[in-house]
Each structure stands twice: as C-alpha cells, then as structure tokens.
Image (cartoon, rainbow, N blue to C red; front, side, top):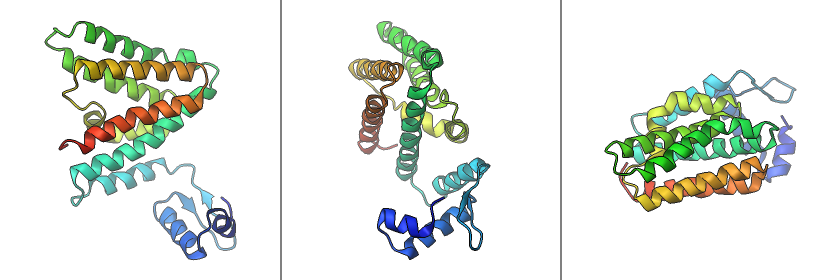
Length: 209
C-alpha cells in the first residue's frame, strides 16, 4: 500500500487519521503492518471481511432499517465493481446468458400476471438476475456476501407490492443494463446500477422493513 505520508498528502488528512485507519484495517485482518515497512493487503482476508460486516450488521443494537441501509451501501459498491469487471471481459456476452434468462422469465411473468404464483416467480427471478450480475464477474466477494446475507438481500432487493408498471420499468432498466455491459460501456452500466439501487433505497426509506 502507499506510505502513510503519501496517503496524508493524497487525501489531505492528518497523520493521526491515517494511523487510526490502518489500526482499523489491521484489527479486521485486512492488512499486515510491520515496523519500518509499508502495510501489505492480506490476500486471504475475505472470510474475515465478511465476518466483520456480519458482526457489525447483525449486532443486537442494529435496527432493521440500519441493517438494510448498510447492506445496500455495501451491495451498491460490489455491483458497480462487478459491472466494471464485466465490461472488460471479452466473453461478457456469454457470461450474461443466465441474467438474460431471468430477465426473459420476468417479462413472461408480467405478460401472464393472472397466474396466481406470478408475484413469487417474478420476485425469485428478480433476485436471481441481480445475483447473477454480481457473481458472473468472478469476484469472490459478492459470492460470499450472497452466501452470508441471502435472506436479507432478497428481502431488500425484491421488496413486495410492486405495481405492474413498476415491474415493467424494472425490466426495462435491467435490459438497458445488459445492453450497456455488452457494449463495454462501463460508465453507462454503472449509472444504471446506481439508478436501480437508488430506487430500492427510496422504497426502503418510504416503508417499514
């Protein structure tokens, strides 16, 4: 990692602030700090990272609203990172086949909305679409997040009581996201991700979770 002096200059903060940040990272087993040497990132610290945020978000003193807000913030960062990685892959069209299949199923479910099980089916495909986008970048962190927080993420990402028009808008946004990734347009893809997750954030702030 950069030296502490470099970080102070880059972010215009005091040396005390940087030292405190390194202490937090070391406590979470994300970096190793040795006397007289620069901090080194631990490459095998994924489990510790997941355990750390699990402990933070699942502590008794954390409300459901706070838990979901923290989880959504974490998920937003991961999803943007995932689409950035996907946009750089030469085989991205092949990687998107699974998300495309879920998107097709969502559209078909809207078209057959009279089916008594349509709400559940749509929600399941909705969640699977977002999971596939996050996971098909081959980044192990999203996979661990989904493994640790699958029930909470599903509740957060597929909030119930969406109107048919809201569902159509969601399918359209997902379609635009896939098109942007296929074109390798990271900035557009990231912007669409933000729009999608901001909508979820607005719904979260507008109802009791």
